[in-house]
Length: 407
Image 1 (spheres, rainbow, N blue to C red):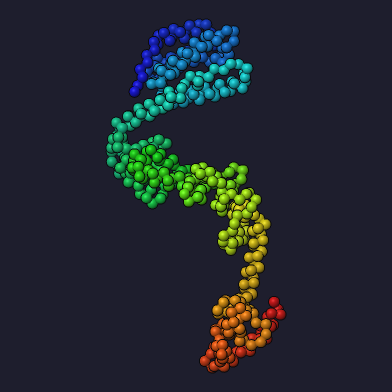
Image 2 (tube, rainbow, N blue to C red):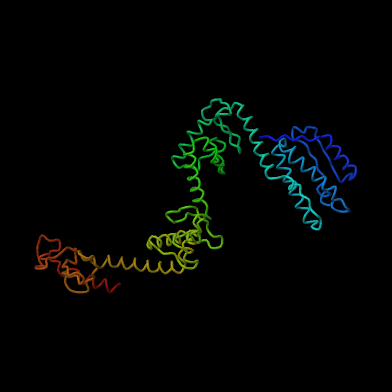
């Protein structure tokens, strides 16, 4: 509902003229003569306005501010264009802030205080409303279907002013959202898509109007997940019943606190917060050590730093040494030992024939080929001409001894 407040322009002009006569160059008044177009500019110089509290001028200052308040709150609220209001607020803030530090002993008067937030918001809403009214009356050519339609059935992107019909955008965005390509939900014009920087995403309220509430809700969830996944300062709460975004601590990178349930946890291992200097539990030790060794081999400093921050440099170096030793032992066992076919225990023969009996499970097997041997007649395996180990009962005794001496 619009509020009609009339101000006698002639009376205002007479009052300002009187102030101009009193203060001469210390007071300025400008009127474009186009009040209805939003070009009224009434101002005292900011420097002199800040010093008008001397010599008993408080009364005149009060009159000035009262007049300013009337003009800004009522008359200009329905006529001042949005850009002009933004510029006026920025200028007042910048100039008064600068003067404040230079003359801190003066009593300060800020014109910003005379502009209520509700009035400023009203100007923004009214300006947007009028722009939408004009947009809906004009005709535009959709860059997708190449048809000309009224603005009522079109959508314009504020940052680039590209216009598309709502039907085309609806189908286009629904496909992108269904496929999870939320990073592509922006202006589809080639000029915006070919830019290096990411074009602004479509606002949620606009998506609901374009593609429906269901698609808008899915779009909101996908976009939030995309933004959290690509933000190094944020992660996800590991609590199954929560799983909302959590923020990493600025001073302790491993520490993260959920914004919803306040659960504090380690952002590396997702376990309850265990302290900054306590290493994370290693679930897959071999995979982690291989990753660490590959990073050192390829000089991937970021990966090395992350792993050392997560598990500790000394812990990683110790595990790396153990991993290398175990790998060497496994290679030696593979070359010089035979595993029991029952319990898979690796056995190295130091002397004697190739008939072996596992000291762990008691299985009889051939040391050459690893096959089971009969408990009643184990040597038939070496005496049968059809056996692959025929006459190999004592084979390899010297070679094994020599290789053991070398190693």
